[in-house]
Structure formats: C-alpha cells, structure tokens
Amino acid sequence: MTVKNPFVWTEISVNDLARAKKFYEEVLQIQLSEMAPPDNMKVDKDDPCYFEMLAFPADMMGPGSSGTLCKSEMGKPGVGGTMVYFYADDCAVELSRVAAAGGKVIAEKMSLGEYGFCGVAEDTEGNQIGFHSLK
Figure: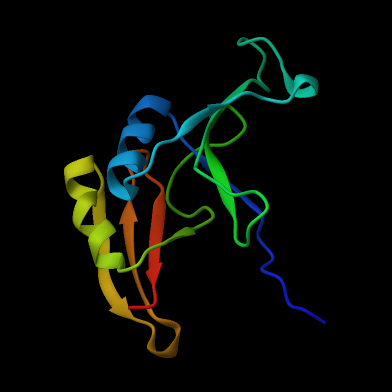
C-alpha cells in the first residue's frame, strides 16, 4: 500500500484579506489569486455564510497540499487554531521576511533532528504559522 499525505487543502482564516495577501506574498515571495466560490456556494454579501478567498499557487495534480486565505464569519483567525507549515528550502529565509511584512517571529529556525528544521511566526491576522525545511 502506498502511503499518501493526508492533507489536501488548507484555509487560513483572516480578518483583512488585503493585509493578509500582502503579508503572505512578501514572506513567501508568491502571488495569490482571487478564487471565486463554486456556483452552488454563492450567497449575498450580507449572508452569514458569505466568504471571500485568495488562492495560493498550486499544482492540483501534484503531491502535497495547497489552499487559500479565507475571510468569513464562519472562521476567525488567532492563536490556538490549526497550525499550518509552509515548505521552504531554508526556513530561515522566510522567517527573515516576517517582521518587514508586518508579522512577528515566535520561534527562530530550530532543528528537528532527522526531520529537518522549522520556525514559527505570527501573521498579520494573529494566526501562528510555521515554515519547514530539510536544511
């Protein structure tokens, strides 16, 4: 049996979509794009189920996971929720961009032994996020 990574999608809750977009684009050196909801999920802006999303770049046929920033009344950003780790060649590089992008480094790059390295930051919305690298 082939083992597959169990996660296929991530939604990071945000309060301010433009501010969060700027943060993630600066730290990860990527471009997020608007992602329209599927037709069967479209609701008016005053509906409590309304949401807006910006998608991370993705190869939906490739291995791993992608996701979005999501502004919605159904999800609130902050410490204590789900923690996501972003891939990095060297997580110290992404961590070095966090403060200038408006976030805060919580834990500098640290060794995980045979599992590589990681560091933790807080984004502009109050979410704790991690970066993982093998070097």
